[in-house]
Image (cartoon, rainbow, N blue to C red; front, side, top):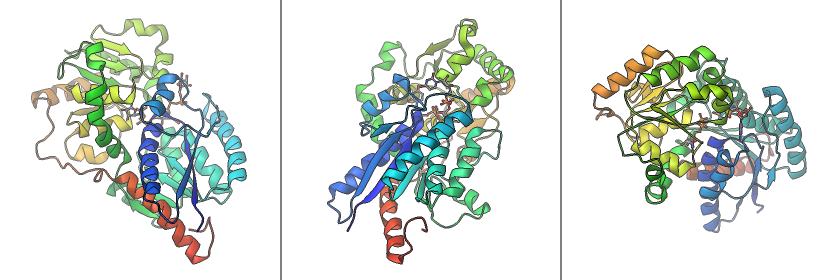
Length: 382
Ligand code: UD1
Ligand code: UDP
């Protein structure tokens, strides 16, 4: 029997972290000497390209080197996505893989899904079914299109499955849990043993807050960004802020005007980020991944957005979605502080699966492919 060929399309920081878990599971699957192997080839679109936004993750997480880097770089949505599409089409036409595997909701996700679907190559979408119900977010457009083009929809939560049902997507949908949970379980101990970020920054656990800001809705809206930074000024604790290049670009020289208690650092490597999260009192963020990592490390999270896809965290009392208004942010900080900066003791601990999500994804890539071949319908008709 022939091996199953997979082209994984990644391009942005969180996708490297998610893909690392799945690539590891694919390699483990192949080590069992199965009759049919999973042959993965990684295509990096080049959406993120700074050393500390890309290479550091491949090195630290031992992700196989990308077989191809499209070097698309930054640009407006249409140009960036269009350039990816053109280059991906060429690669997919030549390789004709059995699956194209995409992650999350970036422009790289959209381009991978669209290029594959047009060539009748089945798409598997990891982190399918998430919705913010805010179509002004580029990510919402990307994930809706990717989901509607996908054959295999690998959802992280029951809510994601329900969201897809509302859009009449029920075939090929599986709740496999969240690969980022696999990643935290795999790396938390390693981070504890190997990261020296706490010493480098001279930080004591529980003595600081951690913040990240990068969403277009915040960085590209001066009033929202000012509201967030004003709130940071009013927080009575050091705030460590690993600054995303997008935010760096927006702030430019205005960075000098940021409050003294805010310590801006370069984007950090994954193990350093996990260490900073584990040591923080409270986390403030507009990141998707960081909201969940806060929960896994038992840290209260304040989400600097008007909505979240990760609604389970809000229902469990672990996350407050407060937007960008200064008073709302400060008041959420005070509320969490008055509860001892601790999460509710009775919170559920299994919101994102059992930590074996990547294995389930590898198994699905095999079983769903075989189901189609057995039905004689051929690829593209799963
Ligand atoms: C992208 C995703 C977002 C995701 C985020 C993860 C889209 C539409 N957005 O946002 O969903 O949460 O990645 O971090 O795909 N830049 C650099 N160096 C880099 C990369 C970017 O300087 O290595 C700067 C450039 O000025 C660029 C800007 O950051 O224009 C934005 O980068 P881009 O990839 O377009 O979007 P992100 O904000 O990173
Ligand atoms: N992250 C990191 N270094 C940083 C900031 C974030 O390693 O300086 C990690 C973080 O731990 C999480 C992921 O990047 O695993 C989240 O990515 P990001 O916030 O860029 O994107 P989002 O999740 O919002 O799409």
